[in-house]
Amino acid sequence: MASATDNRRSTASGRGAVGATRAATPAAGSVSPTEPIEPTEPPEGLLEELAEANGRLEGASPQRVIGWAYERFGEATVLTSSFQDAVLIDLAAQVRRPLSVVFLDTGFHFPETLAYMETVARKLDVHVEVVTSGLAPDVLPCGADGCCRARKVEPLAGVLAGGAAWLTGVKRVDTPERSRAATVGFDAAKGVVKVNPIVGWTEADVEAYVESRELPRHPLNAKGYYSIGCAPTTRPVAAGENPRAGRWGGTKTECGLHL
Ligand code: SF4
Image (spheres, helix red, strand yellow):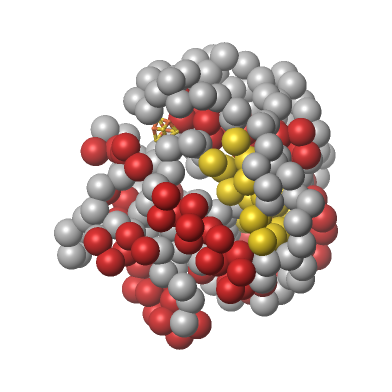
């Protein structure tokens, strides 16, 4: 696999900013978007350590879970965000400074998401690394077989190749597939420790946190969009509807990042 930096855009600018655009290099060892991903064996003793940590951290505050990750894995901890909200970033910024956040840019995001990313970077004083597949829009257009894999999963694999732990905003209420997600566990498909600090939160918890911290909101919230990914496959949801119902028109619930 290529080093983590090979697949990232420039990170030369300072904190509180989004890195300049640079075409990505495909991860060495990447496979065809339709080939199955081979699971990775964890190092000896890691599963036992994670099981103990998971038991200890289940129900703990997100800040404590995030603190454990950075204490255990240091610089090899990678925080990703889709910039549908700023909750995980704000929580991590209370624990880690300076803070770097990775955004996977598929090339199909709403312009509002890209603008929101700039707003969050400035307001929360974090540095955003924008990672892209480098594919042109007409190569594997949205909906084509392997597009999610090529534009999200493979670039993420390049990022995580330089990491040991991956901090995500996964919540059990998101989808049936996520309902049994652990706080801490080993992601064999990615070959990293996956850390889900807000896994036990509900949508009401998220809303209460956003309100209490006066976090900036994604501009499309005002139009009914809450789970926000690529523009062609994201729609607004009705009041009371699961936010994830607005993704992929009901044809699937996951793009592959969290499977
Ligand atoms: S949602 Fe569409 S554009 Fe985005 S990565 Fe998946 S298939 Fe590609």
